[in-house]
Length: 110
Length: 111
Image (cartoon, rainbow over all chains, first blue to last red; front, side, top):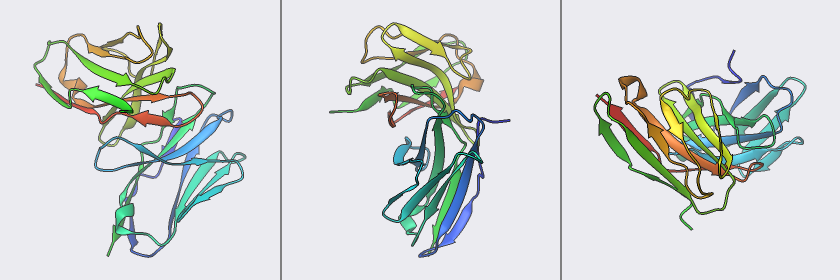
């Protein structure tokens, strides 16, 4: 079983619609959680950190459910520029050994 | 502030050749990591370092060596390249608790 699992998609989303997807992690002691965005196998870039109480950044909302060991990302009012692969990242202990999911592909269509 | 830099951007090797992928960061981060990314596999950790002089193996360390003589540099050595090492390689650094910053990647092909 992988440490961090994601639905690979693709999620095909009409422009302006809402899309949401989850990521599950196996280590219940995990300390920090992130969503990264990756375009066309360029370097991943941080989209947002995920806090215990949930957090928003513009059209993006992230949630953490420690009891069920998953995090989620919701994108509202999808733009064509949101088309990318979204990587779930977990830091199981304080330190630099991050664990990555394989990514969820989102394709926003006109 | 250049962030994380990697060289070369592209490289073609023949089986059995050796080479070093360079990675440097100017953010004074203690933690640095090397990943490889293959289609459908996500990023897999090769080696990482928690500070100068300290390195450890990740998920897929075989065929690779690293060293960390300074905080800034974390080179990755391919000892004897194999076609299975054809991949995109990313170097990353972090302060340990926050986000990781990635370099632009090295696209390696082994013939």
